[in-house]
Amino acid sequence: MKKLRYLATLALVAVAASHVLAADWMTRLSPDTRVCSLSIPGAHDAATGNGFEGLDSVVGERYARTQELDLSQQFAAGVRAFDLRPAQCGNELRIFHGTLTTRLSYAHALRLLADSLKANPASLVVVVQRHEDDAKGAGYDQSRWAQLVDSTLHELGPVLIDYRPGLTVGEMRGHILVLSRDRYGQVPRGGYIDNWDDGGSWNAPQGARVAGVQGGERLYVQDYYNTTMEGAMTTKLDLMRQFLVHAATTPLRGSLWVVNHCSAFTRDPEAPLPGNTTSNGYRLNAASTNAYMARCVVAHAGLVMMDYAGVDASNGIKVMGKTALQAVIESNFTASNDKKR
Image (cartoon, rainbow, N blue to C red; front, side):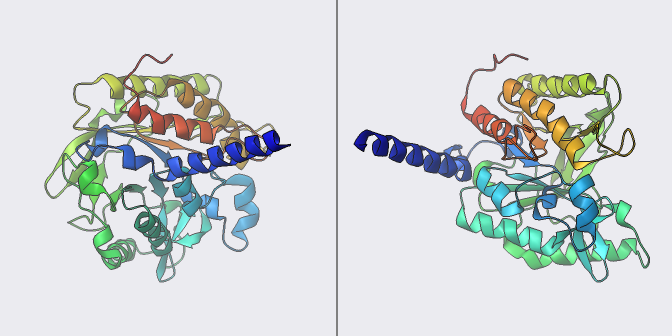
């Protein structure tokens, strides 16, 4: 009996240690390391983990959920890159997925991340945002969207950091870097991303760029998001592989940003129509792409955006988001790049 209690205690200690490691993994990074050369686990459409607002919850849970954990839980699990998609909803910005409203406002989402950083000051956060213009409705005003983004970021204050080439971990600790795919003013409160690409070609994404007042750096983006068609999953995995290999081996890795998406949706046999986006379609895709990332990730992977980050099972499907997240984290501390590709 004593032995059983001892083993149980060891197991609890191990579980607790793993949570500490996940929440505090950035304490292990050298302050001189450039942020763009890290492997950073990220959450695609991160706010869907907080659920959907009102009647949108009926549709959202079935068709648009991409995360099991809420924003704070994602941070606690080790996620440090967050895909947020604000759109105008009356006189405020809400986080949307397509036309569906999540329970988070833009301001609340950023405050949650700021609070997590306050409790973990050795960490840093990268927010990749875009204007979710699928959510345009009556009274929509592009200039109003830009004003709301700018004012929200202004109110967030000194927790934000301006992008500049060569940003290091030490400079970014305790800060949020907001990289916006859509412009909201002449001067960003963070940085802008130009020429984002979501095609299926290796050559296409090489014109993208991260830019700020003090200059810019090249960006490679893999955001191939529809794996429903025959052969599309093979294309997706091959693109993921090419980005992993290039990010790990390029001599430019100290000045090259990489965003490599595991996230996509694949065919859901229970979907009303073939090719429909469903939450299970995201889960089924994650079962393949997250598992592949866990096997193949090597150092300097960039921002790795995944669905169901931080959990290995969702709705009975093995989404492998915890395993992939942990592999991405550990790739920062392993010198070997000889994993199977």
